Image (cartoon, rainbow, N blue to C red; front, side):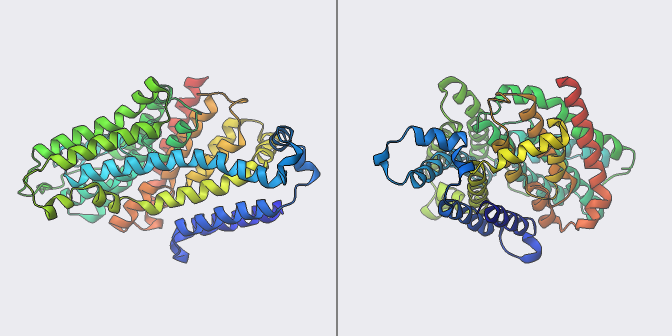
Length: 444
C-alpha cells in the first residue's frame, strides 16, 4: 500500500508541474492528491515494520486495550496534529494576502512606484531591481512582482527591453523574499514550523540574497545602454491621498509587527497577522466616512478577500496534506536516509533541491524536507534550514515556471519559456551559485 501512495503522490506531483499543458488547476490536483494519500494510508493495515516505528509504537504504548482500533485512532491523531500545523500556515497566508489587497485597493503601493521616474535604462534597471528586492521582503514575491511589472509596463514602451526588466524583477523578487520570514511562502513555512527564527534568517541570508541579485545586475550593466525615452507617468492625473498613505503605513506596519509580536508573546505568527488584519480592517471602515455604500464596498475586506489568491491557499493545503501523509508513514525519513547514504553531505542535497525547485513547485519540496530532517538532528537555525530557505527561494528563478513570481510575470508580459531560458536563466544561475557560495563561506 505504501508504494501505491507514493505512486499517487508522484502522479499528483507531475500533474501540478504540468498544470499549463494539461490545463488543470494545480489547486484541484493538490486537493485530490492530499485526500487520496490519507485515504489510502487509513486503509493500509499496519505491518510489522510500521508497528516498530517510533511514532506508532509510542502512540500504542500510551493507549489502553479498551481504546478499540488503535490504528484508526493513530490516523485520526496524526491527521489532527498535521492539520493544526497546516492551518497555522494557511491562516497566516490568508491574512497577509488580505492586508496586501487592502493596501492595493487604496492605491498605497503607488506612493512607492510613482517615485521612479528616471529614463536612463541602466539606472532604471538598478532602481526597479532593488525596490523589488526590498519590497518583496516586506510583502511577498508574488505581489511585488505584479506591482513592479505593472509599473514597468507603464514606463517602458519597448516590449523587447521590457522583457529583460520583467526577468530581473522575477530574480529580485525571489531573492528578496528568501531572506525575510514573510517574503516567500517557503521561508514562512520554515519560520512557522519552528526551523528558523526571524532575526537569524534575516541576518544569515541578507548578504547571500543580495549577491544573488547583484551578480546578474553587474552582468547586465555591461549590456544595457541608452535611454527608455520620455517616461510615461504611471500615476495618471489622480494622485494618492491621505487614505493611500495611511493604508500603506498601516499595512507595512502590520506585516513588520508580526515577528515582533511573535518574539514578545511567543504565540504563533498567524495570531500576529490576524491582529494586524483586524486593525487594518477597522481603519478601512472609518477612513472614508463620507463615501456612499457602493464606494466603500470597493475598499472593504470582503472585496479584498475576493481578490486574494484563494486557489493558491487551497493548493498549499492540498500539497501539505499529501506531504504530511508521507511523513506520518515514515517514507520521508527513509528517503532522507537514502539521500544521506548516496551523497553524504546535506549541502549537496539542499543545493540540488534548489535547482529542482525550478522544475517543480518549491512548496512541496520544502514541506518534504521539513519531514525528512528532524529538529533533533538539525536544531533551530541550523545551517541546513537557512541554506534550504535560500536555495528553495532563489532556485525558482532558474526557469520562468519555477516560482509564483515567474508565473505571474509570464502571464502579464507573455514571456516565452524558451526566451527566458536563453536570456535570463543563465543570469539567474550565476546569481544562485554566487549567493550559495557566499552563504557556505560565511557559515563555514
